[in-house]
Length: 131
Image (tube, rainbow, N blue to C red; front, side, top):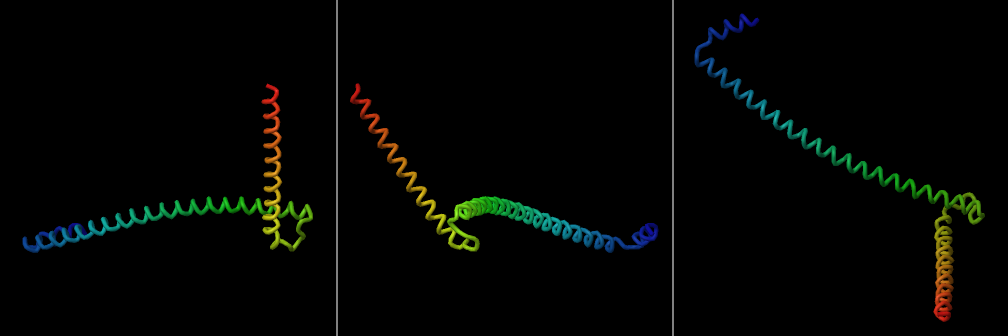
């Protein structure tokens, strides 16, 4: 087949050969332009993929954080159930009861800290009197 192609090329006139070369040069230029466009598209898609991966990683981290919070709340509900503060099927009121429980615990903690501070002040005052 290459022999036939060589014979055909020898039969062509100089102008035909030049036209063939110009035509092939245009095709090569067009293919190079297409390759450049495809490479840019690949780069753009790779960058978009990296951004999406980063967002997905952020969402995964958020999900893990939310899972942890949910586990904490499930544990608090379990403790409330065991303590008899809520019964089965009463989960809707559990958040309100948890809020109430946390409020009571916070108030108790603050009262403890006030008493502790008062006691420390009295001890400091007694030490000052002794000196």
